[in-house]
Image (cartoon, rainbow, N blue to C red; front, side, top):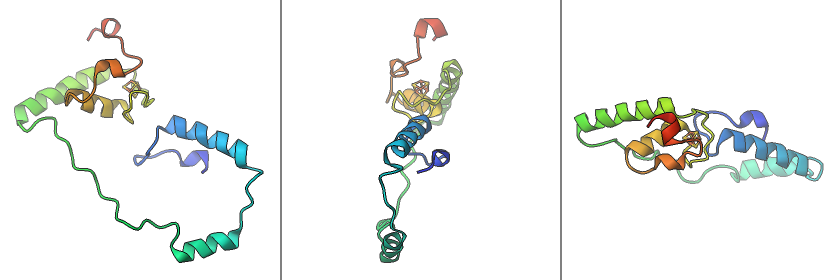
Length: 124
Ligand code: SF4
């Protein structure tokens, strides 16, 4: 995998971690792996690299079933988001700070899950 491929909305790993892993793997395996183009072509024709089952979207999670409560939570999330470092580092387990905030307002995460967060310093 090329380091330039570690971007986009469908990342399954934090882009910074993926980029570093990619660089390390390149250093480790670059001269060890002999690539047999004919074998790869044979595998492509045999369907080896294709997904057998469809990839289905996960159902959307709402902030709340009540619209007024949902809007309140969304606004609270926006307020908290402004206080976060917005680095999208992924250390909290969420792929982005916005995803973390969404988990937070649903009660599925704690402010303490953000390694950069300090409630007193940030005035929350
Ligand atoms: S740990 Fe904090 S800064 Fe990093 S992605 Fe999570 S919320 Fe954002």
